[in-house]
Length: 113
Length: 112
Image (cartoon, rainbow over all chains, first blue to last red; front, side):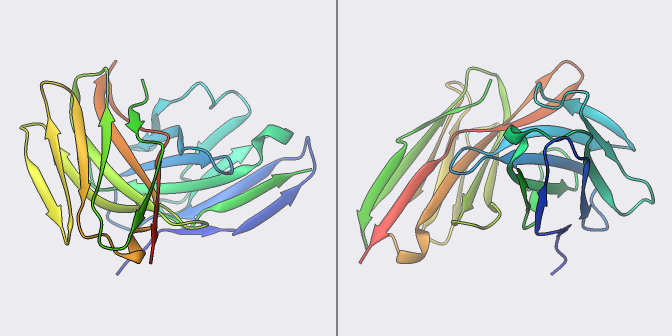
């Protein structure tokens, strides 16, 4: 069964550094999402992406964040200047359409020191 | 905008039943249910479209009351493997897009 792949599984970075989180969605999915989950808390929506552009973003997704799908397969989340409060598990998810199940990747645990 | 889940946590003995509720202030297009085990990604359980349908998945079923914008997840004859955090996701139209947001989750613990 196809799955969503995220790399790296764990990233440690210093405050102020840039990080890029990578995701390879399932090939026939058209809608892509990034969510984050601070330890022990709920899954929070960051951004949705469709047709090579952002379709929706949350208030968390400020100017420090950006997403790209540079080559039609990889889907990346960049955080330009990380803060301590960015430490969380970041999940990539994809779906065929609205109303379709989301398939989540296994997540990247980001630790900002 | 996020849905409200209740209860926050529930502890069961194997074989007991539980109900998890999810309510929204938005006019919903669909409700999703996911289960997340500790340290893992959320896994899709089921999706309910507006129309008040009920769905089932093994001994786990759910209903969606479109008029009340509420959904309930029913776990019957619980098994140890049901332990985890259950999230509802509510999908609604806002602006020019559909939006899917998750509740805070309900931690279910099933003990032998």
